[in-house]
Length: 84
Image (cartoon, rainbow, N blue to C red):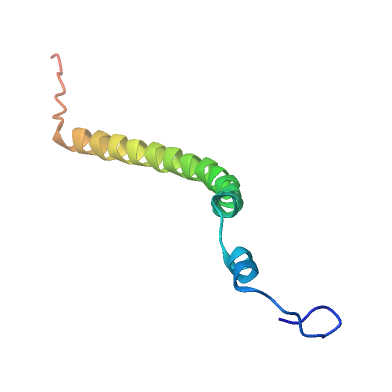
């Protein structure tokens, strides 16, 4: 192992094991970093998703209403009563 000046350092096996060991805190910290970034993005896209879903729902309800209305007009018989 080299230090900042480029000189060779002597490292014992115990020191190497401690430097390479991953602790529970390291894993938890990294998980918080990853989840924290994803959480804010997910919140932003969730709001957009809800708005799109509401818009699509309203469009579907209007389309069904208009189709049913026009179909009802075609089936309705118009009877004219004329008095003589």
